[in-house]
Length: 495
Ligand code: GBH
Image (cartoon, rainbow, N blue to C red; front, side):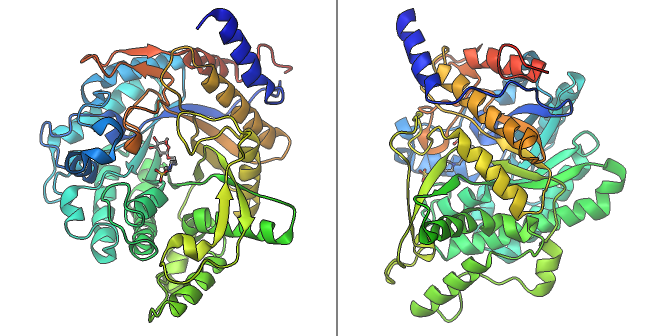
């Protein structure tokens, strides 16, 4: 592209948004970047790693992934993690959020067989991070269930999975907890449950919308709580760390000021976010009442004996509620919501249970991902909503980012980060919301699930045609580096 075109595009991109705020992030604010095991590690069957559901899914149904891609090699971080750490060091970030591959540590999914090479790998990563002054933020589960556990039913099998996850969590705390002080049990369990066991588009590809997807969520929430209590009872006193669960949502903006549209938007966020967030983060615990009532009503009309939404006992509600030390929130975009009358009975589904219409405004800037439109003001509204709904928790944004085709001159990503961070900073300084950290997704281009390698989120470009998987900083890496160093989003801040 010739420089004038670039300049023109940049001006056009920028002019769609207000000027970023000229004040600084608070002194104690923490910046990081993130990746996840299946998306970057590769080494899918090396040194004793077991098969997981994404290995199985991409190998068995290659046509479901763009260009039949898979994570067999990905960014090859299993071998190149030291290069990743050089990049992190260069960015100057305070922390690196990554996830453990369960099957690399426990090839069969249970603690009866531990793969020492997998344990060593993570010990090496953690040691190298600490030596470079970068805090490890570790997610236990970012969607890659050991395949042998899927063969026993996977997440909808509550009795099996709560205990097995708890064993895995205990092992991880005991192996790595002397060095790791920030833990996330699950990343975006809604994708695991609704995409994995509802629509069946993500691994393991089970289509049981509004039935198994609800059972899966029930299991995950209980498993999280059990892991949290294990940390509390067996590790907290000596390790002094923090545990959380990552919940994600778009912001949902009512399509109009009408009572009905506002009610529809609230219902949508309760189903989308409250489903996982309320049992853990809400002072009352349990699923959102609107969800309990609506699923019960529709299940009855559909002839089910009981609600398709499993129930927590009062003891379980108490055991689960409050199992967090900070609120981890992933968010990328927004949707508009319109009221709808109840969808007709006849197709059992989560979407029928919600019965609203959502769409994205055609004027919103787009990205390389169909679902991701650039709506920075939505994030300010969302964190205010979280602050109010969940009684002013400390919030860490554990993911936020933008996709393009992987170009080094990635102005679209710079504008995205600048505008989203500006809205987050305004929420902190002007609205009084307690956001203490921000995580850019992602450190580098990686395996983007169904999108394969066609949607790039990295601050660093990775050359997937080169067996060295060469990493090159994009313009946005320089931008982010400057933000981290100066805590300022513009050339010169006022304070
Ligand atoms: C995050 O999900 C993930 O944690 C991370 O692994 C991922 O790389 C990153 O975002 C970027 O996508 O149209 O049915 O395929 C963000 C939430 C949920 C957004 C799934 C895309 C696709 C649904 N994502 N959604 S579908």
